Amino acid sequence: MRAPVEGLVQIAGNAVLDVLVRGTGLGGPAAEVWSDNVQTVRNPVDGVLGGCGAATAYVLGGLGQQVALNTNLGQDVWGDTLRNWLESMEVDIAGLKAARTAVHVIALDAVGRRQSHYYRGEKVDWRASLQLPVPQVFFAAGYGSVESEDAAQLHAVFSALRRRGTLVVFDVSPWFAGRVEVEQMHALWKQIDYLVGTEEELLVWQDAENAEDLAQRVLDRGVERVVVKRGSDGALFATRDGAQGQVDVRPISAGNSVGAGDCFNGRLLYGLAQGEALYDAVSAAADLATRIVERGRGALGAFDTQRRKDNG
Image: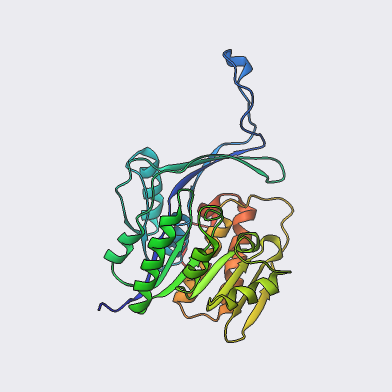
């Protein structure tokens, strides 16, 4: 049995081009006459790196972590753009068999509320992760094309990697809701070392009275450690051995949360790979997510320069 490669983090998840249109909405009435079907916007339209896999890997690479990415990046112009961004951070990209790249057009109003048009792209082949070098840390998250079979495949991948000595981290995401049975999700949790999700996402799978109660109930399901992302309320973590903590963040009066959760995950994984105390890793992850919201450029706003390698 192959031993994990020290210092290697493998990410399995999707790659998306996020197109940010600020200060307007999408989906206005269609019309044949050009002057009747155009909405003008005052702010520039930005294309940024998105996806629970690609954005997370980008952050890890920028921090200097050795990272491999199993993703659904397409063989098209958008895929070339995302690939260039990822390779600039020395991300080792696998899974390059998709024909088209996922694209998410996001209209943002003045207070950051979203309206989206999302082409989900092709599926991620979770099983391909077992053909790559065994990582020290493995991370996966749901995305727009998941279904019940994805949870079954992830169960097998998580189990196999843990037997090889890999630390397994899973972000529940919003995408499994309504597509996977609760019992199937709870069974998946028993195959991981860290469960990550927003408070709203985790409440889909586990009733609770508050965030602290939620964390404890998740641990009671067999999860070893849980990190609850709480947006402007920071983050909370708890472990089965009794450790727990709350991390606060500085308030942001106006911002764009696109990509903040994925970048939080990237900095959290960096901390785990580097052996940081959980409080320190969660605190640094929350700080980076706050920076992402403030800068409004998704993962591309994670660093002051293209190749900044510090602790984020």
